[in-house]
Image (cartoon, rainbow, N blue to C red; front, side, top):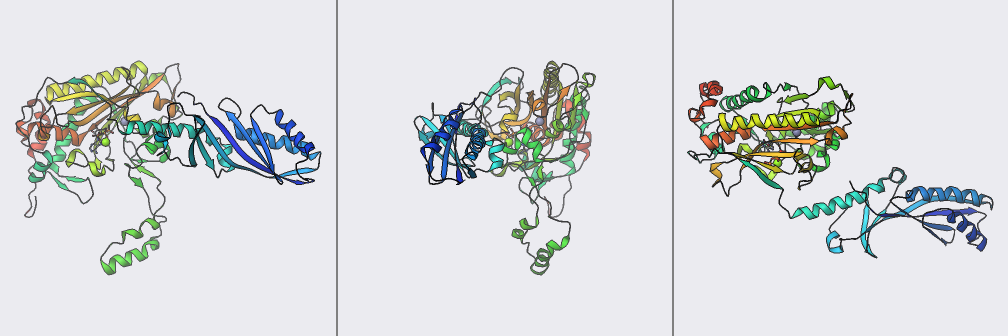
Length: 509
Ligand code: ATP
Ligand code: ZN
Ligand code: MG
């Protein structure tokens, strides 16, 4: 990150007591002498017994608050000789002066920052004014982080109107024959392969559709995981905020995650009144629940890989155990997709196999390349799909709140795999479905989680998320609901799915 240029101005006051009888020339001279020895720009004036002090510091000098406190110590010693004491040492406000450069009032007028009470324009500077400062805030030098937040918000505003970065890098030779042009969710509902569950974006998958997911999983096991020697691990699905703080999700996708709030105590009596209401009126008083629940202790799995980086946090990895190649398929991911829901390709609860690997730079790139070869083989030769690849904003930026691609060098970044869905219209103009992706994060997580190797090996990580529902929607969209019509090379995997007869009830589907 480039160093930001700005000036910090601390405005505060001390109250003089004891032998103080107004700002005599002698006293003013004493204060001037003290301030002369300070290399920062300072100002002072009197208001009865209140001595107002202003200290400036730019990024390279001592932090203005430290200087403000130094002045206090020096003044205290000096004034002691005159039997004058100092009390109520208070910082009244801080101002951060940032050179306006290409900023204008118009561009910043909508920006709001926590702790910042006002944003002004003055002499070609943007001035951020911070009142109500306490010692905790000042001592920890949190003021220093405010300009970063300010510029991040400016960047966000710039990106607001822009389209997400997307660059096509490959299109399959296979073209779908469009023998089937219906919406897989509608057809699968008719056939009773799944049933809408009374939760937004959640379906119950029957044995038939589940067997199709397992067929896909088995294909992935044979053609990728076992071939490339990825080992299965069970990654936790409850994510503490501390982990998301490090991966960026905490501030990047806070409106998309599901939060975890257990009851305040295990004492059931805190629910007594609620239970009475349910029993007496047969209604559920939902509004009474929040007051019985704890503050969230974390959130539900959004992307599977964050606990992987936690596992290796601050650990030293012997070179001979590299590469580490693990995958997780132990449970669902949860996202509050809200308005974006459509069928079972976009769910609030979905299933994904996620592969994560950790190795030297060359190792990570080589694993990624081998994976891409395996994927290509599956899509071209086994599933015979119409698909394409696009370079997109790396997810580790996107999920920390950015939409432009800041890492597009050949090795790092995210590649999305997209499939053509005939039911959505012509291939040229309709939206294709991202059914999986693959990323190299460079040293991003290795750095934030302080992962080291015992030898002088620079470590990188990569991950790839394979969405089971999205693979299924892709195959159904291109081949239809009759499994016999699915590609012959996939048939061996479909034996079980084909044997399952759909459960038909008198009243359903
Ligand atoms: P989209 O742009 O379609 O929302 P995304 O960029 O949010 O996808 P990623 O965060 O990259 O998706 O997640 C990795 C993979 O997880 C996707 O390729 C997809 O297979 C799967 N996935 C993500 N969100 C959903 C969802 N809501 N329902 C089903 N699968 C999903
Ligand atoms: Zn991941
Ligand atoms: Mg998404």
